[in-house]
Length: 129
Figure (tube, rainbow, N blue to C red):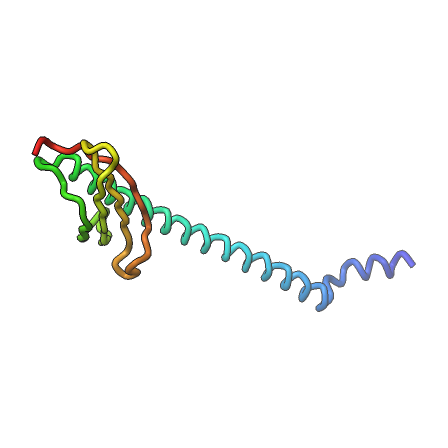
């Protein structure tokens, strides 16, 4: 009886055991691949949103440093940040305090018109007109 246990231990794995091990390994590798792919997509999205926010902040800074008061209205344009092109749209409106204007800035990817990656609201002081 002891010989049959020793012989069975020396025989190795059965085909079913190997198939089960391969199935487990393939599921694990597929999950790991999906996790890495998702992390890469997330990093790219964060980069795009960060660059878009910088475009909006730059636009607000330009308006704050403008030599003359900014008239209420809508404007749009394009900018490149970090080698990536973006569109921007700004809406300047009056506030209850006549010395300030509200600025709403939306920035997005030119390949996806209308979809904003970043939005920024700021206020600028009016210059003496």
